[in-house]
Length: 469
Ligand code: IFM
Image (cartoon, rainbow, N blue to C red; front, side, top):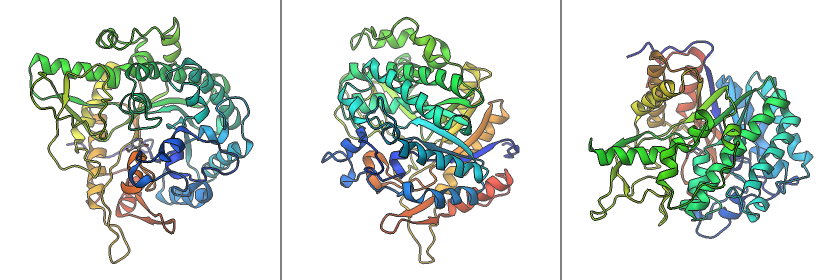
């Protein structure tokens, strides 16, 4: 048990992403992204929901930033919509789009809130997907050009530039299992996407270093904590294989200088990795000021004997196609509850373990929790409030887990709750609510849930030990 007290310097924030909240999908020159196409394709999202209107943040950004300020947050993590600022994904920039983010950044600074901008949270301009998408190298080069445009426009007003959000999802869910845009199910393409995302990260990182030398540079990874069903060597090998795909395919080039040899060997029947050119891994290894970690739940695996029934309970949506390229002999097992409304297990101790692993493997690398939170089936009570005690409990336990890791030496500098607002939860549409602030999608009214009140008190005091719940 730790003191559960965070220092003044610890950064408390909340996170959002452009396509999930902005709406205004066809306004002021914004072009289409792969998520517009995907969500408008029948059968792809729950209820046919799209991000066309979402939480209407494009028009309500100022009031939304007032909420950020009233929560007392020191930082706000948002993403820039590539098709809003560079509609075709190449060439001409859209001044109206740049102006929107310029107002947003200034609005944060006026409120004393540190802007943390993610360059890419999954909304690839459709034209670039039509030209091949992330499996082709040219997309990484286009990303470098896009990065140069936004850093030139917003540069040093942005405190932290985060190149990519969860490239694991972009590559494996977008191109292998197909449960995310662009919905392709091509295992070799998914691995090529992994590499071009790593390359894009490095190229954009160099741009930040050149054009905004005082800004901090980061990337956000959704690192997996993978446990074996038993202590058998076969299950240990299943963990190793999934760890290579989930974690080390990004950590390797970004922080370790190269792709891990076992990843290349495990996937040799899928691709020869000839898309990796000399010098690419060095580019991807641009030094980071902070590594962003997104964490929600843990993963339980076993080696599959090829005969017994499979569980395939990896919680990433129903698809006949696995995101786990080249790992058909690994089975994903259901985990004991309680679960969130996503069906994800609640395992705060795994977060402590993850942070300590990172400390051990990448000593001296500062860390930030750039997303953590939970969807639950919120109810508006007769008193008009949302008593989301399960979300409060989830947050409290995970923040305590971070305190535990800090106490054991992990250099975790901040925490961003996912999410500020209820929003478009990708394939799940508006059916899953992650916000600490409720959005009534009929009226666009915002209502603080109990978790928002709780979080405000935590941010104010920096002490978990004196908070109820
Ligand atoms: O909503 C997403 C977010 O866009 C990326 N990280 C996980 C969240 C919850 O699924």
